[in-house]
Length: 146
Image 1 (cartoon, rainbow, N blue to C red):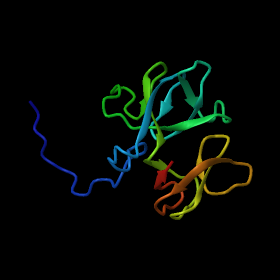
Image 2: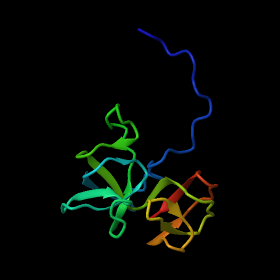
Image 3: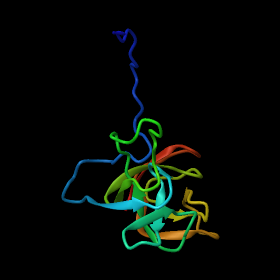
Image 4: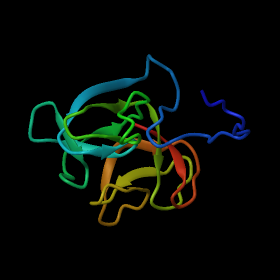
C-alpha cells in the first residue's frame, strides 16, 4: 500500500462552493435535482421540474441559489454535480464563489447572463439582498452572503 510522504503546508483558504461558516441558525440549504451538470459554487435557476435546477446561464431569470460543494460527489467529476444528481443549493447564508471582476466587502451582487458573479449592474441581474463579505481580485474567491 502506498504511503503519503509529502503534505501541503499551506491549504487553500477556501474552495468554490464551500460554505462560509457553520451557523446552522442562518443556513438555508435545499436539495434539488440537477437537470444538467453544474459545478460547485455556481448560481442556479429554476429548472423545468418543480424541484429541478439548471445552471443560471441556461435560464437566467429565476435565480434559486448557489450550489454547495459536496465532498461525497462522484470522483469522476469531483467539482461538479452530474445531470440528475441531488444538488445542495445555498438559499441563505455564506458561501465562497469565484468572481468575474474585483470586488470589495459590501459590494452588491450581480450575475451575468453567463452566470458569472459580478458587482457591476450594467446588463446584469441583481441578486436581491446579497452582498460580498470579503474583498477579492478578478477570478479570486469571495465570501458571498445571500
